[in-house]
Length: 264
Image 1 (spheres, rainbow, N blue to C red):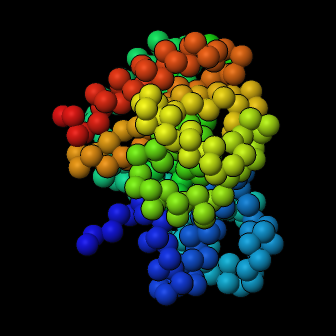
Image 2 (image 1 turned 180 degrees about the vertical axis):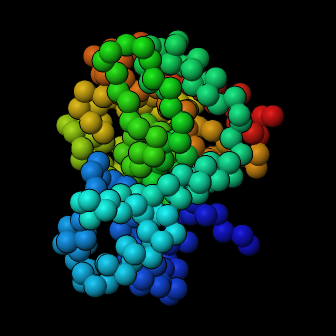
C-alpha cells in the first residue's frame, strides 16, 4: 500500500535510514529559513551544536549547488535562489487550481482581511499563497510560514477530515500548545472542537494561537477526496467579531469547495 507523504508515520523511518550529513544539512536550511537575517559559520555551529568543521563542509556544499548564498563581505549565509526553483516545482506538484489567486482576492476583498492558502506537509501547515487587503492594519503571515498543524484554524480544518488514527499520531507527537489563555487545554475539548469543525464545515481560531489575532479556515480536498490544505481569512481579533467569523467561515467553505480538485 502506498503511504501518504503527509503521514507523520513516514518520519519513523528516519531512525532506520537516517543519513547524518543530510539530516544536518536539512536542519541547517530549516534554521536559516526561520531567521530574518544572514548567519555566520560560528553562529550556525553554536545554535546547532554541530562541530565547526562539519558545518563548514555542509555550508560549502550547499552553496555550491545554490541552496545557500554566502555574502563575501560578511562571510555569512542565507538561503539561496536554487530553493526558489525547487519551491516552485513543489507548488506545481500540488496541482492546485490556477484560479486560487482569484479566489483569495475575492475573500480578501469580501472580508477586508488577509486571505491565504496553506497546505499540509507532514505535521506542519505551510502558507503557499496569500492576498493582503488594502487596510493599513492587517495580519500578514508571509508565504512559506510553517506552523504545527495543531496550532491554528487551518490545521483544525485539516485535522477534522484526517483519519482518526493519523490524528492520534499527530497530537501525540505535537502535543497541545498553550499559546494563549484561549488555547484549548485538553485532548477531549480539542476532539470536540474537531467534531464542530466537521459539522459546520469550517474551523475558527479566536486568539488561540496568538493574542490579538483570529482566523477562520475551510478544508481543501484533492481529486481522491483526501484533505490537502485549507483556505483562511485572518485578521486582528478586534475586527473579527463572532458574527463576521461565521460569515467568513461560510465564505471560505464555499470557495474551498469550488477550488477543491475533487469538485472539478
